[in-house]
Image 1 (cartoon, rainbow, N blue to C red):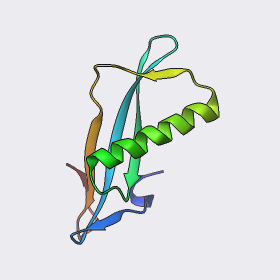
Image 2 (cartoon, rainbow, N blue to C red):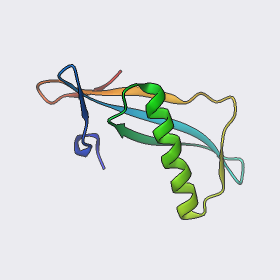
Image 3 (cartoon, one colour):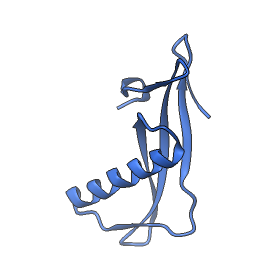
Length: 90
């Protein structure tokens, strides 16, 4: 899936979504980061909540044993598309 295929919410006439990177440690203590594109979130806090819910569902569905990595920041960036269709992260 690409950013272009995501249905994005409209805020002030600009398409908006959020890219949320969640840091995890696997059962073997390897650091990994999973990224989620969240559309229709009103702000970054809501986007993080939605991404955490998705990560929890993903973990339940595929049996991966991983935990959020404490002390490692969560990455949150806005995904914007301008009138010409150019996509950028802010």
